[in-house]
Amino acid sequence: MSKASVEEIKLESQGLRGEIAENFADAALTHVDESENVLLKFHGSYQQDDRDLRAALTKEKKEKAWSFMVRSKMPGGRISAQQWLIHHDLCVLSEGSLRLTNRQGIQLHGVLKGNLKAVIAGICHSGLTTMGACGDVVRNTMAPAAPIKDAARLDAQLLSEEISQRFLWRSSAYADIWLDGEKIDLDWAEVDVNPDVRAKTIAKDEMAAEDPIYGKLYLPRKFKVGIAIEPQNDVDVFSQDLGFIPHMVDGNVEGYTVTVGGGFGMSHGQLNTRPFLAQPLFYVKRENVVDAAEAIVTTQRDHGNRTERKNARMKYTVQTMGIDGFRAEVVSRLPGIETFPAKPLNFATVEDNLGWFEQGDGKLFCAVYISMGRLTNREEGGPQYLDAFNEIARDLGLPFVVTPNTNLIIAEVAPEQKAAVDAILAKHQVPHADGMTATRRVAHACVALPTCGLSLSESERALPGVLDEFDTILRELGLENDPILVRMTGCPNGCGRPYNADFGFVGRAPNKYALFVGGSIAGDRLAGLEQKVVIRGDISATVRPYLEAYKAERTAGETFSAWFGRTRQNGEAPTPEQFHIELTERAAKLAGAKADEAG
Image (cartoon, rainbow, N blue to C red; front, side):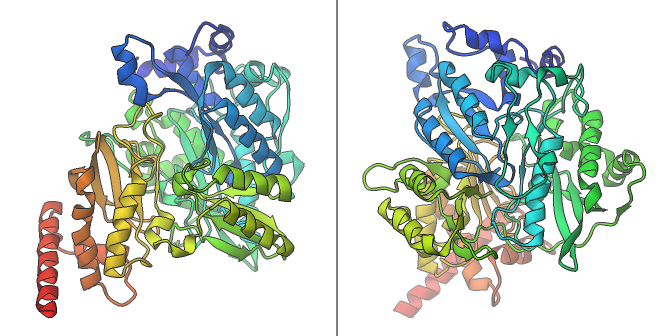
């Protein structure tokens, strides 16, 4: 299928309806055709197949092991106890696990075609939705995960709901296909908000001939939004198409600095594709924030590249128009609304604070480490994640928040419930983060194989082993408490956000990765390509010289990010190849010095 045909499919889809209903009504079909798969993404699902089985099935001349991934859309990652229990129950219609995403959503994998309608309807009846979780629209709006009851975080949660409401696509197709035309409320939060911002599935009599924001063609590509609160950049705001950072005056949110043009997708060897960090656009008062967001989205709608999908994200629109030209176009769409110069921004980390904390209202929350965001009941004495959180939701009625680092927060815990939460986590062998290296606590990977059709190499299944090797080196060097950001992704699309990590591993082929080094624990600097190919078995030997040189050369209190920026990226920096040779030589000298001391 040519790239241009995606635009044709959208144009001819009758409000993203296509022939999805007909495809799913035909019980003889195990999968849908490619045109319907394009439209299905807007409804929150991707068609996939089990790539572990693909070669054997092909050899046996059998069709692929088709299934579907379903993604829940949860502004700010918030999910009530009842909504959680419904997701847990839906596991029986999937491959049996819940996958937390780094966009604060939940994915169910391995849903067979005959079960897809029941899964989507079940999610909708919980008060959440899959509508717009994928596709060429504004996707899930991210917000700071910690449920602290201060003015900045409460407003960020409210803003995430307002943005989600504004940018739902307007067609009855979703309700007609999955809910038999039923109109239901989407209750996205357990916080006190104005009911006017609650989103509703669009009913038949509200269907417009053309979507008032998206038009007939929707957006050129996906569009990601995040809200961050300084100094914690947990949502990775500079990786977002559109970012918001609040500015406080007298304890209240006066307005937001707006950033635009972040995005990490690229293609190996294609120089016209590359990751970009978002740039400050302007500052706008709180009452005008959502209107500013719409002006930015419609600017991308009208000026984004619809000819070449690899260059269709808003980051390329900003680069093509220039930040000043893009700003002028957005401002022209905001008559009567004043904009101001962006406020200075200062972020320190993308990490989650794991463990127990006070919410500020007399209650507590506990941020729990989830290995690779995969919630399942591990075999052979491993963590029983599903049972643990199901018990907390069922017996204690506590809500959760999915974090941007694919961990899970247990929220609204009364002090007298703390012991019960700890006992449940211990009973089900959920690991405590205190004994982990700082690197393991913040690392994450995309799903990749066996379900992602784009993946070139392992990611979720490979990174835990890579981290075992990192841990050995870090503990040996006494760096186990140093914040070093490691991320892995199965292909250059970068869903694991590797391009601003200290060490980013990007799949090139089975067991082969491109190595990017030199991002930032604050998420505000891009890494550079250090090696085009690193074999999986050579990763520890490849990274060790960097860590040894960092230990030997760092100044007091200097992070790996700061050290690398000082020694590699400033002044007359050597080429990546030269730098790696230098690091190896430094490591050899250090090893020789240690041998002399031991002798």
